[in-house]
Image: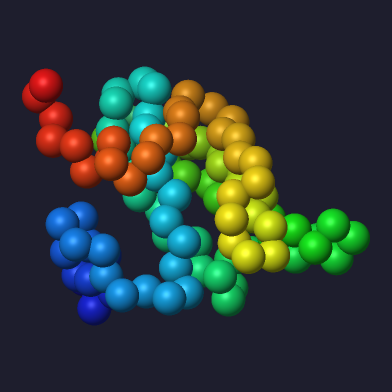
Length: 104
Ligand SMILES: [Zn+2]
């Protein structure tokens, strides 16, 4: 396990300092697993030069039931989310929902 994995793991309690990271939270509809995916502003976003939007596409594999979800998030030039969609059995959740302790 690399240094970055440890930082990300610890980040479940406290968000690490990460000026280049954008975090997207997804929950699997099949098994309920919550996932956090990091997009790097410098490397992972594709710019659409016609609209000046930034597009992030990610193939996400659920670590529990191994289903694949395809997420697409469109950001404006200031990295605010404009629209987002998931193909497959899953939906977006908030950071608060991600951190929520299961067993309600
Ligand atoms: Zn699942």
